Image (tube, rainbow, N blue to C red):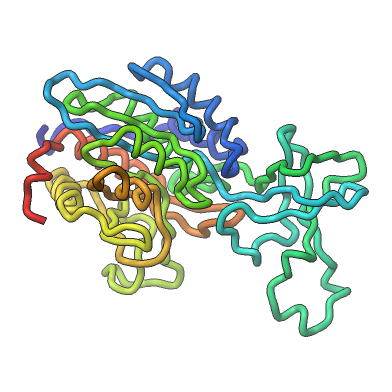
Length: 355
């Protein structure tokens, strides 16, 4: 493949599909709506489609050459959300967070609750009724309620999601579940034009937001030669004016983030070198995601069987784990291009390089 090879693009159809994914409900443990969407979309492009007992949706595309390396791409279907725990009457419900939600974000947010997506709001005491000392701290979770109105009816265990609809303005994307429907949509694009040199598995995983659970099972069962988590990573670029990446992890508009390390994984240095080399060869913008908190499905995948070389590559996004995330279309497109070329140029010889 040469530096002039035509690379995949993000256009209207990709953005429309991302909107469908982001707007749908898929809280951890209740990813069914996302799985149903994907089953229909990926059917023409996969040689095999299976669903395991964790709810992971696994696709397989056989290589055109033999022998071929076995590669696993993983993107999680689930999103953060809320679970109904106590019914109080008059349409009021207590709830618990599912995943790492910033509780400061909750009061006053509109939600869709239950399988019927009943509209509601997260209610709290009006500011007029608060003491001065109460106004200086986050609203305690136990004082919040989901209010779906007197005629609204939910069941205990129902999930609720933020009622934020996806939109884009030509350069940026806004949506409640860009983490990680961006990764999910990317894997679909890879399946449409898969690398012929690899036995490719794409795992649309469950319960990442509550402990990387689905990916653990998928990686154990598949036991690939390498595993790549495709995700969204928090950007830390508000009020940052310098262009050199030294004081923050990632920022919008500077390309996909190739992880060197996070809380759950030290990326395999051979894979880091491979994807950095591919990006530079093909002039694809990228940035190195420096060591920090957080984790992706790679954190579970690399610990399976006798150990699996793994790496994460992500789209930077602002406002992570809140009611609305923000990302750049160019970063998503560059992520897709980096995976497109990086997979085609991957060889088992990469793993023979000294660590």
